[in-house]
Every structure is written in structure tokens, then in C-alpha cells.
Image 1 (cartoon, rainbow, N blue to C red):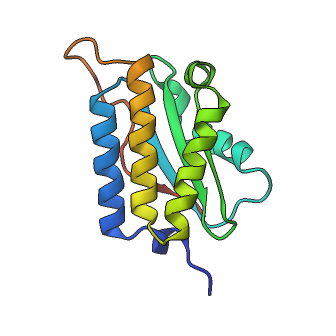
Image 2 (cartoon, one colour):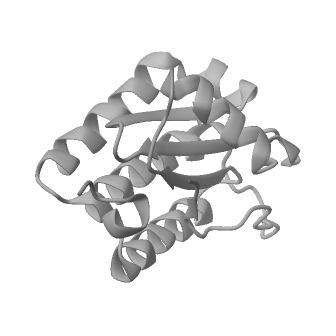
Length: 148
């Protein structure tokens, strides 16, 4: 039997990911989400784009949301960034994020792989979307979301 998305990231792993998101978002005004599901039919980036819309990530004030998407049983993943971020960081950066996750996932370190990708995303996001004053609202949930 293949491992499901919910089995891949247990409660401790989810907590690790949430803490990584919170730490990254303290350094920038961008919003990061992680979405796991079992199967992706077709292109992972197109699916990530659809999930991005379903999660209403385009509704951030600065259009600076980033979605880390993983389809566990399909062995597919993508990082989808809102238009403003994608233009600034470039496709190569997001591919490096995917490669970093793959390295950790190959070792069975799913929480660590996601957390490292979030940490790296936070670094680049802080360059483009730094916190300039004490106002840094958390516009989106930091919880891991799951699909079917």
C-alpha cells in the first residue's frame, strides 16, 4: 500500500513545518503555505497553480504568496509563487527548492525537507518583502493543508 499525504507528514512533522513557516514569515511580509495530496494527474506546477487559487493565496495585500505543493504517491512537487515574487526570484530559484526537498525526501526526511525549503524561501522573500515596521499581519493560515 502506498503512503498517503497524511501518513507522510505526521503530527510532529506538521508542527515542524508550521514552526518553519512562522519563522520565515517573521522575516518577511510574504505568506507561505504547504499543501500535500496523494495524487497529481498531469503537471505538478499547473496543479499547484489551481491549489494556490483554491486556497485564495492570491488575496494577499502584496500578492506575495508562495505555495509548496507535494503529490506524495505521484512523486511530484512544485513551488508556485504569486506573480510579483516569481518575477523577482525567477524559475531557477524555485527549481532549487524542489531539488532540496527531493534530497531530503529520498532520505525519508519529509518534515526536514519541507522545513529547509521554507527556510530558503524565507531568505529570498525577506530580500524582496522585508518587514519594514512592526505591522506584519499573518494573512494566511500556517497549517499544512491536505487534498485528496
